[in-house]
Length: 101
Image (cartoon, rainbow, N blue to C red; front, side):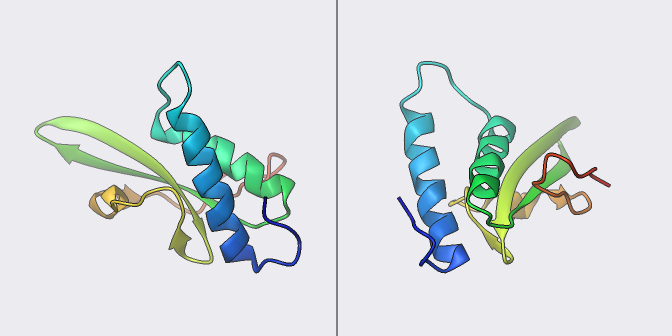
């Protein structure tokens, strides 16, 4: 597990890999929002500032949404870059006590 000596982005990427591995072995399937919220919580527990991003698009007449997490502008939990196909809403904070604009 990443320690305090790691640079925040390096530690955040390690946490994201661990969270992804755990999510793949769950009995229930999770969606991108659930996984991103858990990752934000894990990052907050390690005092790593992350941003929850939520984006939307309209494709084939349907509204679709997607969630991902960024640290220092780097996407942590979206390795195949589907987030690039969604228009992100405003910034969101990972802090549970902070309102999301």
